[in-house]
Amino acid sequence: MLQLSNTFINRPVLSLRTGAPVAVAVSPIINPTNLKIEGFHCSDSVSKQHLILVAQDIRDFIQQGIVINDHEVLAEPDELVRLQKILELNFDVIGKPVETLAKEKVGKVGDYAADPKTLYIQKLYVSQSLLKSLGGGTLSIDRTQINEITPKHIVINDLTSKVPAAARATA
Image 1 (cartoon, rainbow, N blue to C red):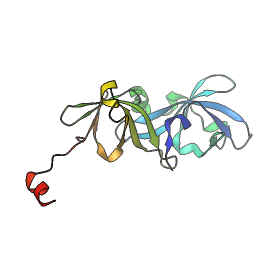
Image 2 (cartoon, rainbow, N blue to C red):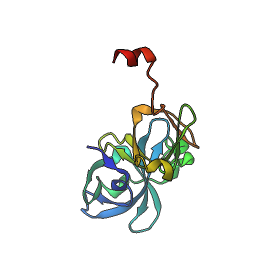
Image 3 (cartoon, rainbow, N blue to C red):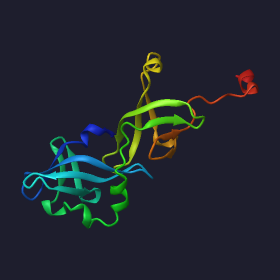
Image 4 (cartoon, one colour):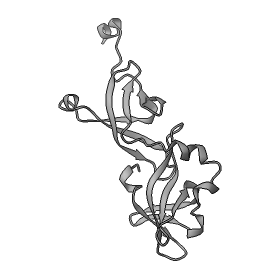
């Protein structure tokens, strides 16, 4: 079952060993090439130090927070060599402008839904401009409709595809 972004943000990180919160997951680390949540920026509960929780170390997502084995799985950003490029990008989906292949502006990403098992973002919820929102409201964009993700915007397939005249006549 997909979960909205707020279930991943500002959540307690709970240790199975101590049975207590050891950190707070402040924000996700999103890989823009495949829209996967690679981990979370965390704030240590005791020292308030900035640490990283890598996705592979997450045991489960429960109502009370994010479950891990122990505080020891939290790492300093400098220790994670494989994630350095993604950490430097500091990519965030929310607030990114969305446009079609035909350069038509659709709106901005207001929220997203991810699969808690795989941590892939599956849906983007795009808030349209005031004029467009009078007719429809929020658009739901599936990850299969995304063509390109750049640091400045997200490009999706055209919203309406034109049907050839011959196809309309037979229908």
